[in-house]
Length: 295
Image 1 (cartoon, rainbow, N blue to C red):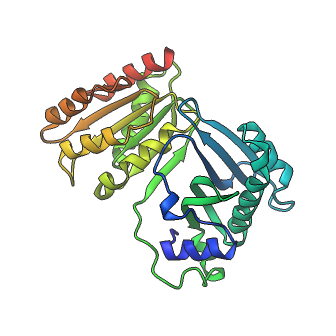
Image 2: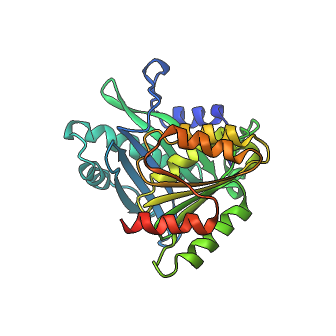
């Protein structure tokens, strides 16, 4: 269950988590620290992930936390050390991560995703956060759901174990991509690293965020994108696709289908993005992915 901006604001205030002032916010993909907490169902524990995104390969540190013993300060220090955060800021990291962990447990959250942690006036502050509450526990969280939840686009994101990050607007296209990767990439042992399905009527709104999520997955070596125009002109989709590639250096393969798709392909070609390849079929796209992964 997604929360509205007001509900998220009340949660942060309850746990005394500072919010980055608007005059200090910088919309960026690089040189930022992010935090993610979710359920690790395989180990029946909470997975805490701290990541530092730079203009190089992102640094990611993960700790698995037993929900009985809870999160310890030394675990957060381990993550801060892994990311080469200056030691003077470790206390600030510990404070905000432990506060978010308490929030995760006490709010019956399934996911907390902090886009950016900013060092503001000697402490870490939160900027950009998604909180997903377990609907089955909503009766325990009535103080959080006393207003309509925010109408947010759904991102159906599934982690897998391969090398190809898959994005498509529609479950059918996602399944077709995955089948093609397993079939045509079998000899090269190619497999999906994750797949993300976007609701088609919100495609333009969240395409950039989808590209960021999949490309920053450490398992992803190449991103494959399959977009079909139903609600929007294919040329508009191509323009938003290009905008979403800012800061992404991994190879990206895209298939665009719809009326005037040749014009959309020209838009991408004219952008002269070195890491982007346009494919016309899934077979061609998988062949390109095999070559990119093998490099």
